[in-house]
Every structure is written in C-alpha cells, then in structure tokens.
Image 1 (spheres, rainbow, N blue to C red):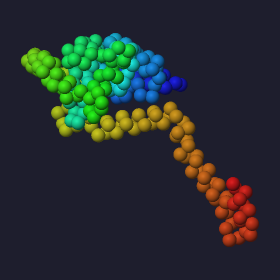
Image 2: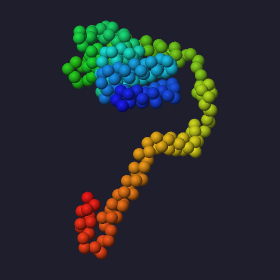
Image 3: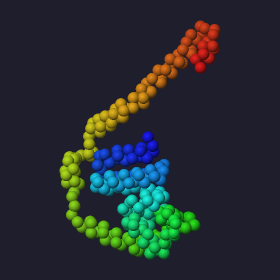
Image 4: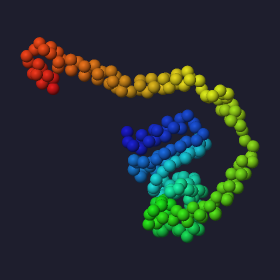
Length: 232
C-alpha cells in the first residue's frame, strides 16, 4: 500500500474508539502534496461527522492543506511563546494589521513560519508576540473567564454519562485487568502476523542445526574443514 493509504489507515485506527480529543503529530510527514491533502480532508470529514476536537502539528503545509483547518496556532521558540491564535481565514488580516502583509505569489503558511522563526533574516517573532499580547491575549482571557464561570459536569458525572464506572482507588483499573487487556492485545497482534510469530522460533532451530552439523564429530574426523566449508 502507498504511504497515503497507510497514513489514512492509522487515522482510522485513531478515531475507531471515538475519542473526545485526537492529537496528530506530523500528520503529513513523508507524504506527497496530494496525499497530504487527501489525509487532511479525510481527517476533517471524520472529525466533523463524529464531533471530535483534533489538534494537528504540521510543518510547512501547502495553502490548500492549511485552508482546511479551522484554527491556527503559531508558536515561536527561544523561549516558547504564542505568536498567533485564531481562525485560519483571519490570519491574513491579523498579520496585515501588524504591518506584515503576505507578499504576492508566496505560500502564506511559509511566510508565517518565516516570521516566527528566530535567528533568521525575516525574524519578526518579538513583534508578533507583542502584537499577540496586546490584541489577541486580552480577548482570550475574557473568553476563558466566561467559560470558567459556566457550571459544568464534574469528573464523576462525566464518567457516569459515558458509562465508565468511577474508581475511588489509586488506579482507575486493577492490575489484573490491565495485564489481561495488554496480553490479549499482544496475542491478537501476534496472530495477525504469523511470520513474525514463527520466525523467532524457527530461525534459532535452523541456526542450531547448521552449526551443529558444521562441528559434528569434532576431534574424530580429519576432513572437518571440508565439512565446514560445505555448509557455506
């Protein structure tokens, strides 16, 4: 199978359990531009259909891929700081308001990353961080404070709603249960690949037979060297 098909399969395995949050690190690494766009489109369709929140770490995507995301978070380093957090469609206007309009015929995402990368010719990370602190951060604080004031479910209530029994002990699941689940998973993976299961057993047996034949009759045969050379 191709790299794009393998990546889409791994995404399907990730969403098979319907998690509330999905983290994808380097989703498009090693894929062509077309396969990367196909994977992100498939991920967008699945998350929208299942109502999942998905966080993706991605480097230098093409414009068609970047436009598929709802939100954009730009980070700079030395030290780690936020340079932008907002809608993907509003990033152009935000950078333009900071006197950094996207030049013509340039991928906007490449331009954004060039601006927030320290120690480069186009480094404007400090100016963008200051603009974030002055323009975006106050509004984010207001939204967070309002969200904190709204009553929500407690952890036991959320577990009960999801049909998960609440555990009052040190661990949510007993050691015996964890061991049984991991052992069953290991056996399932082993049975899916018989070659990987049989090779560690057959290979030492064959190796022992060959070495045993090579040195069979040591000290009793004069033509032992010919016997060893015949084995190769």
